Structure formats: structure tokens, C-alpha cells
Amino acid sequence: MNPSNSMPPRTIATDGDGFSLHPDDLEAIRGELHHFEQPQAACVEALKIVQRREGWVPDGAIPAIADALGLGPATIEGVATFYSLIFRQPVGRHVILVCDSSSCFLTGFDELRQGLVDQLGVEFGQTTEDGRFTLLPVCCLGACDGGPALMIDQDTYGPVLPKDLNDLLEAYP
Amino acid sequence: MSDRRKALRYRSRILQSEDERRPETHPLTWRLHDDGRVVNLEDYRAQEGYEALEAVLKGDPKAVIAAMKEANVRGRGGAGFSAGLKWSLTLQGGDMPRGYLVCNADEMEPGTFKDRLVMEQQPHLLIEGMIIGAYANNSKMGYIFLRGEYVECAHVLNQALAEAREAGWLGTDIAGSGFDFDIVLHSGAGRYICGEETALISSLEGKRANPRAKPPFPGQSGAWGKPTVVNNVETLCNVPAVMLKGSDWYQQLSGDRTDDGGTKLYGVSGPVQRPGLWELPMGTTGQEILELAGGVRNGRKLKAWLPGGASTGFLIPEHLELPLDFDTVGKEGSRLGTGLLTVVTEDQSMVSVMRNLEQFFARESCGWCTPCRDGLPWVVKLLQALECGEGEEGDIEMLAKLAKDNGPGLTFCAHAPGAAMPLETALKHFRHEFEQGIRHPRRAAHADPIPVGEI
Image 1 (cartoon, rainbow over the protein chains, first blue to last red):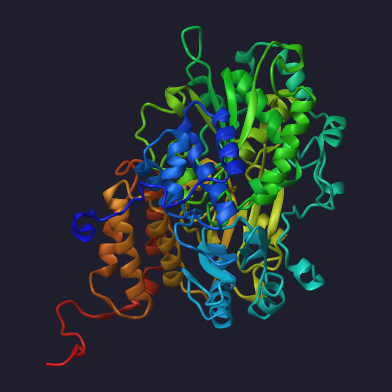
Image 2: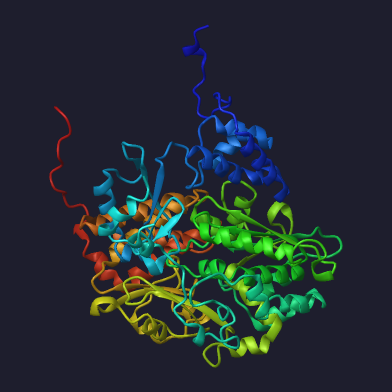
């Protein structure tokens, strides 16, 4: 049989793709199950656990998490693609989340975004060629008295002016 | 870390010093340290901490609900619904399974940065409020639904939950009362819609955060079909003081300013001299708050302001005299919302500000209801055209129609009405700015189109 003709178009990975959950992650996911009435409730955290290790959620992780929780892969994929902080594409070593909501918009978001675009050479949704930074917009970071604000990995900064970016970015090699 | 980078780190803070914050007048913030360090269990316990809970556990849970109703603590997440009334509608009794108490800590309303302060610096106040709430509602388990970006809050809350568990304030047989309750911190993964209470429940259950039709209300059938109470962080933080000092005391905190009792975490952001947060009596005016913020930056004039986040309606300078409480602001075609003001100055374009707001709402729509999913991107396109002077006659009428089509009751949740309210009020107060964006009269020929490709 010619595989190119018989393969259905694949939108959701249903086999492991050679991916298997790290034993620590599997244990952490199972630990989450105790907090909730039903296993599906652990799936957002499960996705975050995988992402912490891999940087993103690779295709093969979807069926692996589905297996661990006793659910179908489509359910997990549906959840993974809904939430903005779950990455279903590879991202850079550091993720920059720039607040684009009203207070930051009113205090210099456009200049900050332009500063980042100039410095990194990428637009929102893109990763620098050296794989160092991914640039993304984010909902109000709740740092409005420090707008314009941004977050790099786990750290929130604000107010940040374009001239501050050199100092800031160099701390994230 | 370089000094420069350290200086850029965002720190949540209150702009009132310890001397200004008193137990009798500042129930939410009087324990906070000037240096912003966490009020740990020891500090908290030494300052009336968990005393309200101790007293409550000796009495009837129904008395808690009665006291909360009498104090008229209105929901601080923005809707202003009486917390006591909400609790009185939660199903409980011998034939009912024990349900859940969920703290909505998904603070994502643009312009809102108040819950972060309490969680980062005084986690035990929230935990005590939750335990009292759970006792009143007979909840078996509590969840703090925290937005994923609040990394520092997660760290502080987890530490405080461990302290509370260790000290016997959480777990089985709390303080020898026979009442069992524990709290789990659930950290989210983004999306503004998770802050809507039924969407939050969907998200907590590990599903896409689509809202659910009401009724049934969460108090009847919420998380996993069990009675579920969802309250905002600030609302729950009001509970211990109400129980300790009484509803009369709580009512008089706001004096003659308003019928709503208590204090409020008010704040200002946008182009003002000193953006920040203050705990002030409920019903403080916009003028007073703006003065605390040092007025508008660079000597410019105030053009418009949002009283409590992106989903509230625009007010204009003449509204600054009004007491900021739920009913007064409601009568002016807006909402108090979260009570954190966003300021727009004379040199800023209302069309651009609206475009920014609607881009937010369009992106954050969960896609469940048609008017919201398809209407909001249309609103964005119209605003983008007006912003660069390429609007057409009829665009403003279409914007007004789309705002109306997204009004209350036409979609499952309040996301679409939240997007409609600032738009409607911006059109009402600043229609001339939108009109300036119209270039082509209806049916008039556009500029010659540019040919595409080879002929």
C-alpha cells in the first residue's frame, strides 16, 4: 500500500511520535489529579508541566497527556489551542509578553513595541533567528501603574522605555 | 541583577504609608508593610488575624450570611452583586452535596491591578475570608483561580497556604470546630474570558473557557454540577473585618458618601503624575482620586476616563464630582467595575483608544456567541478605517448598531456587553472625533484601485 495515498490528513497527533512524558512530569500530573473531582481538570496544569520542561507542547505530548489522564487527544488539543499561554509551536529560550491593553496603550505601548521590533528584528508571534526571544502580546498584566509593562519569562517590568531594552534584554542570554 | 534592571522590576504597592492606614478605617490594607514585604502568618496572627474565623466557627453559618447581607458587601470584581445575597442563594442542606468556593483571582480587566497587591503582600487575609465563606456556604473545597502571569502571587499564596495548613487553619477539623476545608491554588494559562464566573468554572474543570448559560446559576450547579460560590479576591478580603467588627461598623466606613458600605481599593493608571492604588471609603469621588494621583501628566487636560476597567463606559470631566459607587456610576451610563480609573488626555485620540479596546475584546472573545465572535472583529475593522481617515458614511451608524447587537442579554456572558459599553459611550460623548475619520461619502467612487498582477 502506498502510504502517501492511505494516510488521512493528520490534524491531531494520535500516536506518541516517539514522545514520552518524563517520569517526573508523569508523577506531577498524577499528583494534580488529587485536587479535582474529575481527571480532565488536571489537563491545563499537565500542559503547563510539559511546557516547563520542553519550552512548548510538542505534538507527541498531546496523546501522551491524554493517556495519562484517560481522555481523548482531541479534548487535550482543544484545551491546548484555547489558552494563550500554552504554546503549540516552538518558542525561543525566552518569551517576551508585552501588555497591549488600554493603560499601557495610553502610556507608550506603541513606542515600546516598536523598540522591541527594531531591536529584535521580529514582529509579534515570531521568534528571533538565533532562537533567543519570542515576542508576543498579552492581556493587561495588572501592572497598570507601571505602564508600559512587559514580562520576560517569569519577571514583570514596568514602566519600560525603549531606551531600557538593552539593559533588560542582556540579562536573558 | 544589574541595578538598572532591578529598578525596572514591577512591584505592586499602595501609595498610602503605614501611618495613614488604620485598623478602624482601612480593613483591607492596614497590616501592609511600607517596604512591601509579605505579611506572614506570625504578623497576621498578631494583628487580629484569624480571630474572625475563630469566632465564626463557634456560631451558626447562617449568621455569617445574614451579617454579609446586612453589611451589603457588593462584589468587587466589577458586577457589584451583594455577596451576602449570592451566598444566601447557594444550595445547601442535608440532601445537597457539599460544593466549592472559588476565589476569582484571574485579574485581567485592563486597567486593574488591585487583587495582585493583596495576594502578593497579605495572602492570609484572603485565605481567612475564603474559610469563613466556605463555612457559610458549606463548601468542602476551595480553589483560588489565579491568572498564570501572577507568578509572584502564586509563590506567596502557596507559602501562605502551607503555613495555614501547618497551623491548623486548613484541613480537617479546623480549630476544633469539626469543619473540614482546604484550598488548592489553580494557576491559569491566559485568556481574559476565564474571569467570567461560568467560564472560570469551565476552565477549572479543564475545559475550554466557554461561558455557560444562566440559570442554573453556579450556586445551584457550578463546578462538576455542585453548588459553587465564585467571589472576587477583594470581596473575600472584606469578609474577616465584617465578621469581627460588625455590619454597622462596615456601613459607617463610607460615611454619608453612599449607601454602599466599606472601603474600596481605588486606583488610577494612564498618563497621570502618580499612578497608583489607595484604600479609600466607598463613594470617594473621581476628583479626589485623581488629585491623589497628582493630576494629569505634563499639564495636559483630562478628556475622558473609564471608572473601572475596559468594560465600563467612558465618563467625561464633569462626572468627576460623582461618588464612585455602583448605583451612581450606573445611572451615568457606565459601571463602577473594578474602581480603578483609566485616564485619557486631551491629546489622545478617542478613535485610537477605542480601536485598542475593541482589538482586545475581539481577540479575547471565546468565540461561542455569534454577535461577539463575528461582530467585534467587524467593529475593529470599522475603527481601523476611521482611525486612518478611510471611513465611509454609515460607518458610525454601523458601529452603533454593532454595539447594540452586542448589548446585555444577547450573548451568553458579559464579554460582548462589556465591549459595547465603552463604544456606545465614546460615540455618545465624542462622536465628532469618529466623524473626522470619514472620507468617502456613501456610493461615491473611491480612488482608482491599484491593478494586481499582469493583465
